[in-house]
Length: 143
Length: 143
Picture 1 (tube, rainbow over the protein chains, first blue to last red):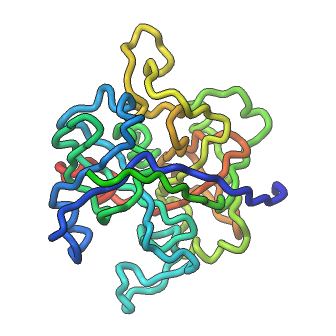
Picture 2: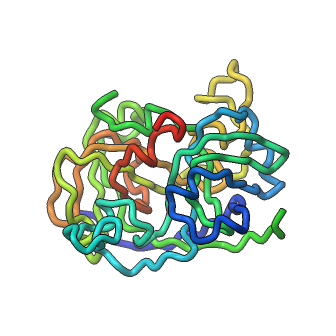
């Protein structure tokens, strides 16, 4: 086993998520069904070349309201479900609260992507956008 | 559009990737075909509860050797392919060089996961592990 060093990593958001004010309080599934906007830092707009309406992308965003010191949770917050480790679920609670969701681009205007399928809250920092790729995004042994 | 603030985010790796010495110099595809180990910070081992051999997980890792100031690349480094934005490809070159790959757990021993399908280099900091979930990891409108 290697010596364990926990050197910290500093990231700068590439942009932020914007949602309509009346999206507040909706569940993740409800949020996904409504359009959201990813507003990129304008200096990064050249990085969108090749994306277009209909493109499927994976969005990494920071869960800026999630606690992160808990290691086991009841899935979906249901106390009847046995505890599971945070690495075995998709709970927002995790040591590095980064979420990832595959979304569909509906429209692009300059540095703003309008997408469908995103469960990020208004104001969430976006960390990365990647083209969806079956080779990386489906279970390895089924490929 | 929101006022654009780029407040930085600091993350601490949850662990590191270990590979055999003779994996050095292999391509991403070759790396994926060989087992790799994710050595978690021992204080986070409780977060693995519920994972087992055969589980498909998404691994987020930091590309600690990737440059990050380039916004357009030729896909797969092939100059014959037209330039694309880094957000439209899976190139390691991107503003926040976080990679994500779906891998299969082969074995778990304490804080060490042996996995297949991981294209991370030896020493890569691991940022998160999530259970693979079709709902988040397949294109939104096909669900």
